[in-house]
Amino acid sequence: MAVQAHATAKYVRTSAQKAGLVLDLIRGRDVNAALATLRFARKGVARDIEKVLRSAIANASQKDGFGGDVERLFVDACYANQGPSQKRIRPAPMGRAFRIVKRTAHLTVQVSERPVHVSAPVVTAPGAPKRPRGAKPKAKPKTSAKAATKRNAKAGARKKTAATKTGRAKKTAKS
Image (cartoon, rainbow, N blue to C red):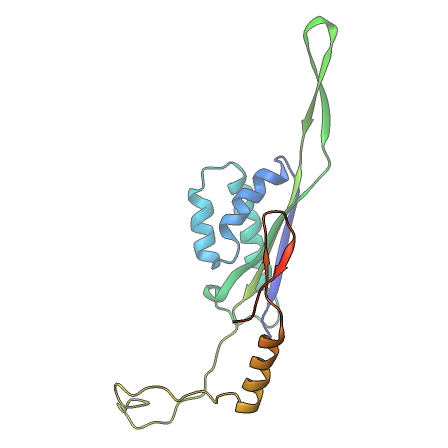
């Protein structure tokens, strides 16, 4: 069974929408490619996501069934949930006040180990092609003649209609 681990950073001072843009870049990638992407991303939240990803990798390496190869880990899921917002007041002209919302986000990154695919060896003569060159693949079995005639009879039994400009349907003669 593949090892899964996750890490969460709470109350990060960014909006969940901005963090989601960076998280979309690394979803489904190998951890090394994801770390390289985050290293060169031109968003401030990329540094916080990089910390969370490194923490998830460390959590996976501490799990019991881990094979020890970090190269097999990939970002299985990553998302940003909205955290609590801080409401602040900014003075405005004529004694009014504007509200400023300082948003926070909870960042979660989940990593998983790619399963090792063991395929059964194909037993053929060495260097022999599976079929001769130029040979066509085997034909698929055709439907029975009885089923084909039944289908054609149903299609012919339906009356064909043509819509006119007025929206009424006219019956047309069979061909």
